Image (tube, rainbow, N blue to C red; front, side):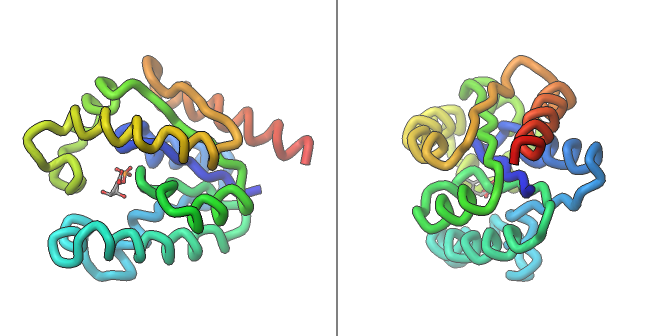
Amino acid sequence: MKLVLIGMMGAGKSTVGRLVAGALHRPFIDTDMIVEVRAGKLIREIFAEGGEGEFRLRETEAIREAVAFAGSVIATGGGAVLSPVNRELLRESAFVVWLDAEPEELYRRAMRQGAAARPLLNGPDPLAVLRQRRAERAEAYQQTAHIRINAGGRSPEETAAEVTRLLLAREGNA
Ligand code: S3P
């Protein structure tokens, strides 16, 4: 069964995804990385040249590509759930886990990794952006996910262990 991680920037999707994939010896796929490889450009360059709209089109193509890999662990970009097409693609093809955390924690983590790679956080008040987008997207995350996990206040290793356990339980019942 495929695993898809959704959630805001800074929630730890890529870190946790890599850990789960490593533990289960499964392929790890990051849709942001597919977007960059296919475009031959960095995400910030795509935003700068074609705007968020161009990025979202490329993101849907990347999701289509990612969900075609059997048994993969897939980390999505934070806005992957905005399009109804993406929501359906993800929910129908995988066990979808929403990694959630409070905006303050998302902010700390995203800033530690550097805001430059994330055009949406490049403005004067990234914490306010995280708060607002999380509130706007909460319903879409909820609709897409099979389960929500609180990734706040614990390490990526602890979160990965819980996600692994849930995935294996789900596969056992499938
Ligand atoms: C975005 C999140 C980013 C990336 C792009 C847009 C968003 O991915 O897809 O910068 O809209 O939340 P991460 O969630 O991996 O940072």
